[in-house]
Length: 292
Image 1: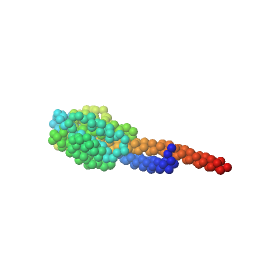
Image 2: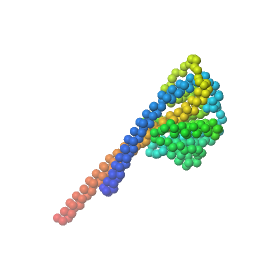
Image 3: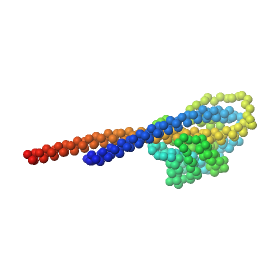
Image 4: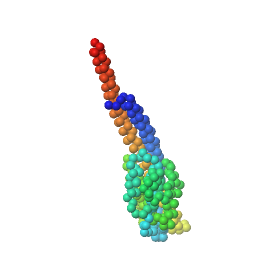
């Protein structure tokens, strides 16, 4: 049995660990609420844009827009959204598993240091690594998205896809691959956006005479790049909510395990102390018996 001094040292260490994990749990919970609020606040705007695109769908020739032209896929363009820090359970590992399943030629673009480290370690073709803050700004995501769109239009990559942890609830984060470009058609794109925001509407034909200035095609050309930026932004917001949720759950589990271990160590310490006291009593009794 370990000495009481060793057990006291372990108890002190476990108490410190529990205090740290408790603090990290509270910080992650606070950040999670803010990330959820940002994600929810972007939904009405996304839905309004989807309605505008739906109004254009039947009034433009979709084959004229480069985002809607199907092309041979020679090189995939993949945006990997990971975390900067660890201690968030299997969140990053699940994303990396999706990356390892990609066997076709691909170029990678990354949000998060963990993803950049993984791609460098596995010697994959990483084109760019973009910094991102805990409170995600649209300008940060826009810079990365526009860079990928430019490479898509130039033919460097033939698709734009996003690998990210989709936020479902506090306990569940689903690692998925979402295609962004090229689009099959506007109606499918609008349906996907509405499904992401949880506001699927029943489609209806709009037979009204609508005048677009300067023209429906030019309005579409102006809206599509902006809406692609916005869609990727929503993915990153979802990823941030997933990160903080996973970290909060991981820290709560660590805190609970520390509490359980602390109870076991306290019991072991009491047993060791009781054994030492009993041994001292026996030695005193034996000495008195021998002296008598």
